[in-house]
Image 1: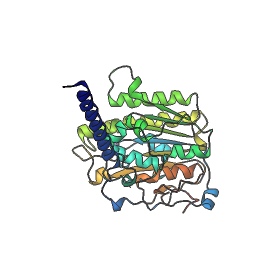
Image 2 (image 1 turned 135 degrees about the horizontal axis):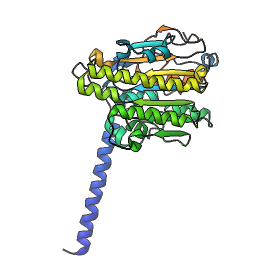
Image 3 (image 1 turned 90 degrees about the vertical axis):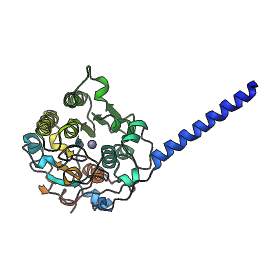
Image 4 (image 1 turned 90 degrees about the horizontal axis):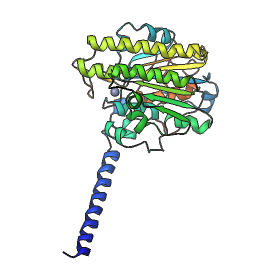
Length: 335
Ligand SMILES: [Zn+2]
């Protein structure tokens, strides 16, 4: 066969391959999930006037406990209790549908439902965030405050890789990348908190996000409420205490809004993705020492309400494109 014919065949084959790859990637990224009407947010979208009347915090600490569902309400967690004893809490918040990690962490941080952002675990693990139309709470705040610094340390790396934007004002920690040996998830979570506290020694982030993953692993291995799951929750509670104490030691506690959230729970056998109560219910807790938090049970919370709570806590108006809002009965200034 003539050389030019071989060249034509090779080029044509490469073209087909490129077109097919782009097509498949487009389908993966653009696939529209089925509607989930029971996950609609009923939170408040604060107006300019309501934002102006807000009590502002200087910083927010978000602790994300993957796979914990509503289990904080089922067991003794002394550190969680001391952080949130005067806080606004729910143990029956709603996970996105399907009740999977990336679907929910994306919703929480970008303020929109899964039906809007369409990010699943595969996309988060393989494609860096590129939907600038839906800014994360970090990005939205940085547009208003160029000088603001952010910190995000995620035991499950796709959150930092495919869900949160890369910004020069944000320090991202990937605990798995720098852990010296082959770690268990519990060791990795403890290491994550070590690295977070180390970073807080040299920076004062407006928003710090710490994602812990070991409870989810215990859930997959042994099921919601199993002895392994409970033991793991106890260790997570100690890490919550360490993070909180760091803020106290630095003199930041009185001026920080503390937030804890879970993305989904597990079945009694282990696993998630379905609609069982122990899977779709999540913990969401908010506390702050400025006298503006309503102690008790908050109103309906859906995971894509988290970004709105953080933005309002910092005294800023949320982007119009966000679908979430601030649940009732969290802030005295917003009822
Ligand atoms: Zn998860």
